[in-house]
Each structure stands twice: as C-alpha cells, then as structure tokens.
Length: 555
Image 1: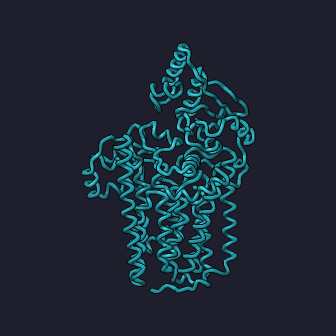
Image 2: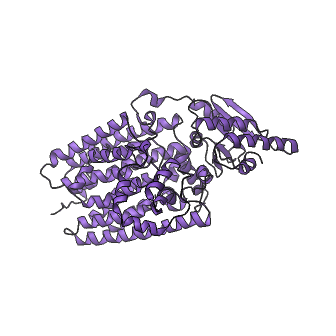
C-alpha cells in the first residue's frame, strides 16, 4: 500500500471550485446562526459564557475559575466549566472585540470552513486528485454535527474542528512542528481532546505502520503528549472542583454512576433527577469491577434504561452509519479512533449529549469524511462511492431537520429555509433600546437569551442568580427563555421579585422588563423584603436556599 506524494505547488492551485463550495456553505451556516441571534435564540450557555470569558481575557484576567453566566450550575452545587482548559478561546478575542456576539458567531462559521478546507486537503493527499476531494468537502458539509452546532450558540469545540484536520494534514506532509502547533490548539479548546488524542494518534500511527515509520513514531509522540495533558486536566479539574471549591465536577456528575455497585440503577436515577439524584459517594473499586463486566458497558452504550428517552442513541448510531460511518467495518482501526467519542457521549447521564443536537457531533463530522477518503483512496469503486456517501450525508441531515428523537429539538432554530426562522416575538431594536438604560460594567442579572445582547462584564448573572446585581433584565411573553426555570416557576419568581420593595421598574416595554435595585435602610422595608423572599422560596424551585435568596435579592 502506497500513498501519493505531492509537491506544494500541486496542492495550492486550481481550487476555485472548492473555494466556491466553501463560500456557499459559509453563507448557509451564517443564515442558521445570525438570524437566531437577531431573534433572541442565543443564550447564556454557551454564547454568553464565552463572551464573558473573552471579556476577562481582554482585561488580562487569564486564571478565572468560574464565570457568573454559569451560576445556575454553581447554585445547584455543580462546578461550572473552568476556563483553565479552554485557553484556545484566546483566538476568539479579536472577533469579540470587533462584533461581540456577532463576532463570535462569524468566527465559529469561519472555523467550520477552515476545518472543511483541511479535510479537502487531506482528501487531495489521499486521492491524488481534486475531483474526489471536492466530494469529500461536500460530504463534510452534509454532516449534521456542523449544522446542529451552528444552530445553537458558540462553542469552543469549533476551534478543534478547524485545528484537527490541519494537524493530521501537516503530519501527513511530515511538517511535525506545524502538526504539533495545530494539535495544541485542539487540546486547548476542550479537555476531552486530551484523552481522545491518545486514541486518535495511536490509530493514526497504526495506519502508517507499513508505509512510513517516521510518521508512526511522531504520531505516537503526539498520543503521549495528549494522554499526559488529558490526565493532568482531569486530575486538577476534579480535585479543584470537588475538594478546593466543594462542588461536584461535571465529569463526576455525568459519569459517577459508573462507580456505583449497581450502575443501571444509578444511571436511571440520574437521568430522572440529574441534579438531586447524583450519588455523592463513589468508589474506584466499583469502576474496576465494571471494566471486568463489559456487557454492562455494552448495554449502557445502546439505549437508555428510561423509556422516556428511548431512541435517542439509536438515532445517533443510525445517522452516523448512513452518513458514512459504515466504513468503519472496512477500516476497523477507526472504531478504535472513534470509540472515546461514543463512550463520552453514550455513557453520560446527560441525554442531550446522546443525540444529534448542539456541538456533540462535531468530532464525527470531522472524522467520517476522512474515514471515507481513507477507505476509498485506492478502491476501484471510489468514483461513485465517495459522491454517493456525500449525498447520503446530506439526505440524513435533511431528514433530521424534518424530525428528531433527540430532546429539545427546536425546528425554528435549525430550519434556515423557513419563514419562522427569521421571525421573533420581540423587536431587536426595541429590546436593545431598552437595554441601553443599563450602564456599562454595572452588575446585571438577566434571562438566558438576553445575556448575549448585553455588553459583557465581570458580573453578568444568569437569572435567577442575582448576586450583587444592580439591575435585572427579564423578558415577558411566551418566548421568555426561562431556563433553568420552568415557565410556571419563572412567572412565580418574576411576580415575587416585583413585590420586593428594593427593586423598582425602570423599563416595561416591548416585552422587556428592567428592574433597578434601590438602597433600603428602613428596617420596615427590610422586613418587607424578607417577606417577599419567603414568597419566592415557597413558590419557586429549589435552586437557591431561602437564606441565599434573602441576601441576594435583598441586601
């Protein structure tokens, strides 16, 4: 088995068709994400969160453990994501400076295009021609993971989408320092890439063991680097979150059931009661015993023990296979390469991660086109096999736009071709005119879908967290984006806060309600404040305790 060798010149000219394809799909990606933001369908998690992270970076604060936009996690005793493992987000800062939320969304779309161009170059390298490489590029843009991520905010994983194909390509070309730099960017985007890198690079090394031992050796070096980095982040992150801060890390939250004597029961309990059903004590011994019983892991990989969420995992597997994943049976080493992605998704108790929504399919969007290019590189059927697979990926994506089993699927956010995607219950200009009444850099608490529209600052709280906010910005109406509260709980909270004398209305127009905190020194007013807080705690959800409410909503 041999691979074609190209000069740099042959890989740099005549790419007008590929450029046209990239620009076309860039336009479609922006048609998905930008109208969502204009119509208040972007949120504190994750767009507002990364806006706040960029704001801290701009101010020279690089070692921030928690961001206030993630306080709903902290108020439930869960450690929010840490910025320590996301240093690649520094690349987004110029786009944030240029356009705030708009800049981050454009940056993400450009990252997807950069990743697609890397896959196009890899396919050129493997096929020895541009024609089939164009089909690999079309295949990439048919993967549902790209479109689902574009439909839901900004995600740091997009940086890895851009970096990983170039790390693999530079490795193929023997440019090891460039491969290392690209891979470091991927590692800096999210902790999972440390552990996945062990499987990715060892599998990549196996592919070239009989072709070029130098490539195999350097791939193993990158695997070793990935493992050390991933282990370091996991140990530090878990110890920092659980021991130093006294909160449960998200890693433990999603996978602690694996450490239980009965992982099935713990798994089902956590799915039903994600926050309150978390097992507070767990043993490494049980995990070791579980590893000796692979049939249990096998069962957890395929379906949920809770019938409410049946079918989500099957939909993911089906979408993967039809979009080109079937080729793992022709190149089994890719089963090894992709196994951490499926373990990460399917063993989690967060059913949002199981399916085809958000950014949880981006790794598959990258690797499936590369898998197909590898399998068909010297195959007699490649002239029709690659185009057919690319078309099947697009058909799968269109079928998922029609309907999904994945929970929380919102067709309006995804279907860029329908009128409803460009409509909203709220006027962008009217809402922003109202938000201008809030002074810059003043602590603010706001509902999720308003946070990306408020200039970010160090203290921008995700309502119902209030902290020391001087203002509360709320939406009223059927599209009020109440998360993490239910609509009924949200209405109860808003009604109760309005009864607190410390807060008074300064704006109530076009569905936007803004409250300003007043200083209260009269003891009778303070007693009224405490009475109002009792009303909140009795009618609201068990998100924050009564004592914390009295100190946060009323000072």
